[in-house]
Length: 167
Image (cartoon, rainbow, N blue to C red; front, side, top):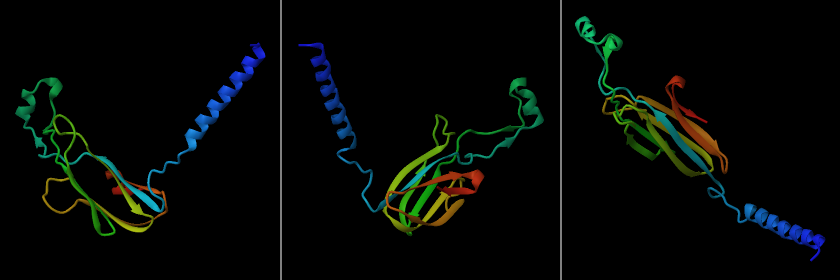
């Protein structure tokens, strides 16, 4: 077999391989969620208040500490769990008590949930409690949103921005 015939054969084999890869890359078509639906994603990481308040040390207690560990207050590390609730069109979509992360339960509580909803107008209410009290919520935000098909709405939480943030 001549060298030219080898190159032509390789060209056709590589060409057929490229066409096969291209076809498989675009077919069969994959959609994450059905047409005429949208997504609401609740994604947050938040450190709640400490389970116990910090205690002011007396001057004798401070003096008894090694010089490199002297501080005016002593605080337990453990944080309270957060309670989070999400209502979509006045129906409860999510309600959970989320424990803080970490070996000493001193880290942030993390939430990630997806909700597939029909596209269109929705009223979303997000609530969060991050204090030791047993009822009620510390943060609440109600928003009226218009979701287009295949749109994703992200809900985050930031104390610096006053609570829930809708993107």
